[in-house]
Length: 304
Image (spheres, rainbow, N blue to C red):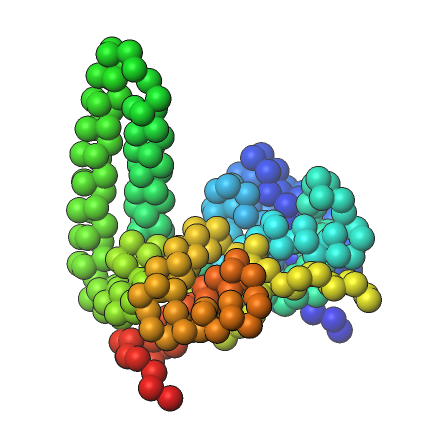
């Protein structure tokens, strides 16, 4: 008998559910009673995977409840699901993703089922995200400060910048306490930051947003293909904050990390576009960081 996989399309008030290969579809409310009913219906089937699309936070309580009930919950990236559907000719770029498409994606790609982040990891992720928001607000206010000349507006901007800087300092303290107060996280942060190009902010983003780092076994880029048509590989899937951190780390490493600088320069000299070389450098950096946490050994220059 074929393994059952489940796709769940999450909205604010409703969960639409589709199962493959049976084709069964149904819906429940996105509340405690609806989630309990969903679990009661799925548990006897022991599905190989229950996939929930990441939808700006609405999926969190659903995925956590499924995992707590012992179901193989996995949160999938909507960009990957949409690319999969487009490659099959099932959806236009602007078409909504439904539960059936999510289930088909999981059945075809078999994403790894990994434990969901625990409460402390979610807190760290929230602190990292809040820091990122405060920094974005500071950048915006400083841009306004350059553009606006009226004195009253300038004073308003100065007051807000001072308040944001104070808030940022407090968040930095909270982050330090969260990471340095945990022996496991402290060790991981030190290992990650031993790599030239990886500072504490990048390290903490990876700890928060990619807690499975160190146990990854598949680091290949997402590939678009269907039948005879194949598109370029890209890393548009996955977690955007992780991707941004890796790109930033790759940009710094391409200047200051001897091994990665040589790697990136060799690609450019071979005729690869600079952006392609940077993507490859970011992927190699991720591979290095994964191995460092796996082996629990800090960075050292490769002489071979």
